[in-house]
Image (tube, rainbow, N blue to C red):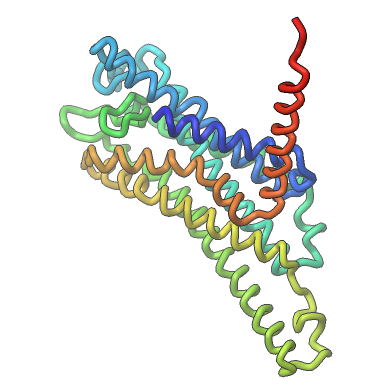
Length: 329
């Protein structure tokens, strides 16, 4: 857990620093990547360290804390019990997950406009619209994360002994789930709706890229006339747009693969299954995804690689100057 928290924080701090110090961060795609990095970093700063703190408390004191599963469970009639940290950590984890999904969806839409309607991109995708959608995604995501507590008094948040994280827990009636336990299905429904929309938009973009590549190949072989437009496509996307679309496709695949176990667990939990070991791997696979984006950017984005190289060069020069001219006391 400590290693994961360190990797998430360092990776996303590097990502934010690179984007802030390069002109690429001033693009609309840069704004979306900064939003995604902030959401990921919040998990590394708040969610994972809280799990570390709870696990260390259990080892040192051998006494479960107040927020541990089953220690302080409020009654359905009496409302919520005393405030405990999971009331913050749980919605932060859920909200940041929804922000990541919605941001990847916005990145996909922005790239698809650049590929399908390159001449209208600057008109359709503006800076103000992008910033508004980013703010809307953050507000809507955290509102959705609080929905079970706002719409029902049948849920609480507690540190789950299986997942080792703060999760929503239904307040049992006897040994039965409450009748409105299916409210939790809002989470996978929202996630898979956006991921499905992202997949559909990616298919449209890649179909257009494939069509353009085929026309360009035919033109190079002389099978097409020159009157079909430059490159055999009158509104051809740029190479950077095509590569960015492929990078976003990889981000979408990585997030879908890491999120799918959580969705399966939530569905099983609503039905009544516990799946203790599976829940641990599901939640921590999703958490591990938070440090993957910097790796994907490093491999796929040459703007990011150049900025990363420049960042390390500056750090090396700074350390060299300190070594040659140490500060006087």
